[in-house]
Length: 336
Ligand code: PMV
Image (cartoon, rainbow, N blue to C red; front, side, top):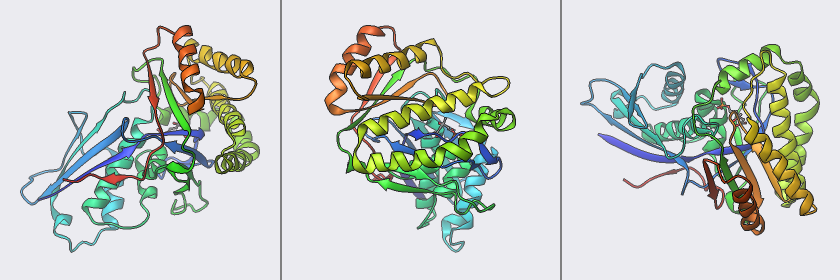
């Protein structure tokens, strides 16, 4: 019997991935950048057991048994096993996978990213695979490739039709910008109405704005925000982050029929952040929204107390205000 347990971080994109050029291989139409959150508070955790005594493969997610032959799970397992030394005894054993997230699943908080990154990382430990695995995590959920690494991470869209160069790399480690903090304003922790997969598919088929974004916008933003991260220039980082979130949701509105992820409270948070920044005479706080109504707020430690007190005053009805101290260290395997 062989057992591995791993944890992987949630990542929050500042330059968004939205739209695929290949649905099957999950190849994006543009590069994206995110930060991985500290796994101390918010993470996915996966234990995989392999044994010659197991009669079949099994998979549990958050305590509920799932089918083992979902296409994405199968694709990840197939791709990992293709890199494994077939002479290892565990190669022929059946496995039981037990995954859990300690945060709301499918509420736009990137649960699938942490989940698939963790699964692929744990499979790599089980089958003793060294080297690049972010391209395999990508087959589970595109943004999962970024959760393979800690700190600031870029997913390169790549050019090859095989997807071999559509991988993630680290721009800067977690301790590069130690003052950076993230707050998640939980507007709603229900499952989202349209999955990011169906939303993106509809966008790619119907939006004309998305072509403009891919051709004329993202490459420059990737350069600007990388420079801002490396120079710890919060003003430039914040402006680029907010503009990119706004563009992703504009593209969702340009989808036909429109994909609406933000709600009235999300828009009120956007207004609050802009009023706060105007009052503070600079971009002190940045919002970003994924495929859901919850706001992820990037800010520096010096701003946290004042901003949280304003949020609590203006939005006493929020489902939750969650505060993350810092960014994640690299993915890790826990001691047994
Ligand atoms: O990896 P997916 O299919 O869950 O897509 C996630 C896309 C966004 O979270 C909305 C943006 C991003 O870059 O993470």
